[in-house]
Amino acid sequence: MNRVVRYFRKLPLRSRLSVLSAVAVAFAVAAVSVTCWFIVHDQLYSKLDDDLRDALPGAPASQYAQLVANCTTTTAEDNGFGHPQVYYIQVVDSHGRVCVALNSLGTVEATSTDRDIARRGDADRVYFRNGVDSDGKPLRVMTRAAVTDGPARAVVQNLALTVAVPLTDTDKTLNRLALVLLVIGGIGVVGAGAAGLWVARTGLRPVDELTDTVEHVARTEDLTVRIPVEGDDEIARLSASFNSMTASLASSRDLQRQLIADAGHELRTPLTSMRTNIELLTRSDETGRAIPPDDRKALMASLKAQMTELAALIGDLQELSRTGLAGGDGPIKVVSLHDTVRTAIERARLRGPELTITSELAPWYVRAEPAALERAIVNLLDNAVKFSPPGATVEVRLMRGELTVRDHGPGIPADELPHVFDRFWRSPTARALPGSGLGLSIVARTVQNYGGEVALAAAEGGGTVAALRLPGAPTPPPDVDHSGHGGSADAGQ
View 1 (cartoon, rainbow, N blue to C red):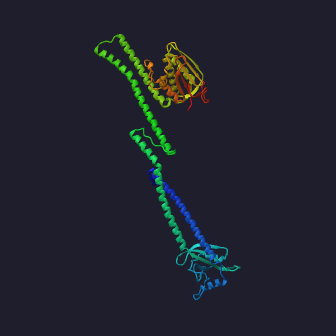
View 2 (cartoon, one colour):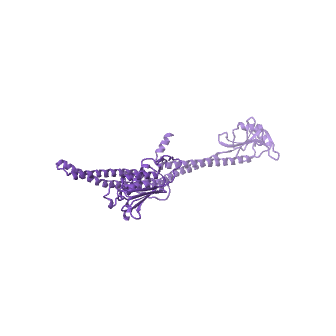
View 3 (spheres, rainbow, N blue to C red):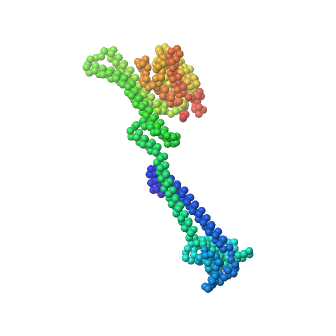
């Protein structure tokens, strides 16, 4: 049995569906055929029993006596009941002696039940059975107590009347019916198998197309292939999901390629400048021609600035790849946004000591990864500090989950606002300032990962205002303990 199951599991899906269809139909046909055969069998036998019951309602007592008397003679001209010769007719006494009527078709083999009926003399008892005659032919046999006919029916003591009819025609009918049912059932099973195979091939054709497409994608890495979607069934949903998956993969691959290309372009500038400065210093050492002290100092300062810019760019790339996947590497926690903003303001003051940073922070709690969220807010504040003139004021306000950072710098032209969150994009007026062009992109990606929104707009009176909004609540969840200062607490999403 285990071998059959293992072999069945190795078959293709369409073959398994065909076999299961054929087996299901075979069981159904077998059940119907057997039920039909037994119903016809019972009906035919019931008709035979009714015919036997009505065949000989009774006979005069003298006729029974004559029949019994003629059992010992061979010269009697008539020891029959006068019935047409279509039945087996005989009487059996309580000792098992059989007396056959003249018009009987033959002799029926008596049984102990026949003798018992003769001995008991129960007129209400009728016994039906299958039996055989003296030649072994199958019969349907009825045995009852011998009774006289007429209004006053009386039991003839110690005699039982046996009437039988041949089963040859009935058995032929049942055998023909069994053969017909078997042939029809076989045709039905074969047809069910063929239909199951056709249905399996037709139904699994979209699956075959999907399989071929997946194999093609795996072999060629061609993510532009799409599967036609027809209808709204499970196969159509699977095809649509596959198309969506390949589209997402293609978009992700394009973004990856774009990121690599942009990163390579941004890295090329500081690396080229560093290589030029290093070559100048090396050539000076090789030729012995000293570089003037002021020029050498400027070269070293330029190298240091370029190394700092390169390190910042690499850090921003790492942060962008990290936030671009899931918002951060750490676990999601309930974070007090107002405390995170307060910490970011302290860091921003260190970077712009000549600036004044004012703050108005109302409590607000969000679910985020603390380090990624703090990095995004620091980038937002750094952007305001970088573009603020000395002695200017940066205004920070957090109310009902909306954080606004307003600077009084030169502002951003309206035609450049749609690009401020693009990776590596830098305004032509800001290319001389330090930065990688990734800070605001990291902010946007982080905020989007946590279900929020961020936007930059021109402020009234000059400058720029950045608005960041994250979903949350003014109070922490009841299962979070904030007895300590600031910080966050674990809370799964």
